[in-house]
Length: 180
Image (cartoon, rainbow, N blue to C red):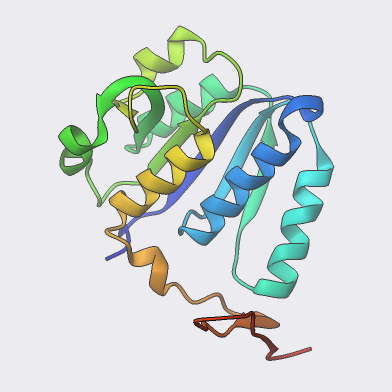
């Protein structure tokens, strides 16, 4: 069952020269696993927004990207409005020990960093969650978190207005065009 409220991702500290592919992959995973959209702080990079608009144009669904200048204010306002803030960090509590404590009936803001995350985010977050306590990719951490918080419901998502659809097959690749 999907989260009854929306899930949004905050990508902290995007650096185009270093993070272009990773931030794009954060957005791809967020969309595919059921998040509504991604806020991106750091250097504004319109190419990421354009890539995601092309994905949505062909593969359907509703998804947005918004560049923000003050991510800490976003976090504080999210909490003030009754939402939950989850920070994915290798320094947090293991996901298996905390996932059941996260309310699924509240809006969730999921923070993933790129550079060193300032300590304020650790204190402002309701939950600092570790997907393993070793260095790893924020893309994999986000995918595992979204899978767990939705109980795998992302696998059954339908993306309205899709022009392309993959037909699962044991061997090979089959993509059909379903509309123009």
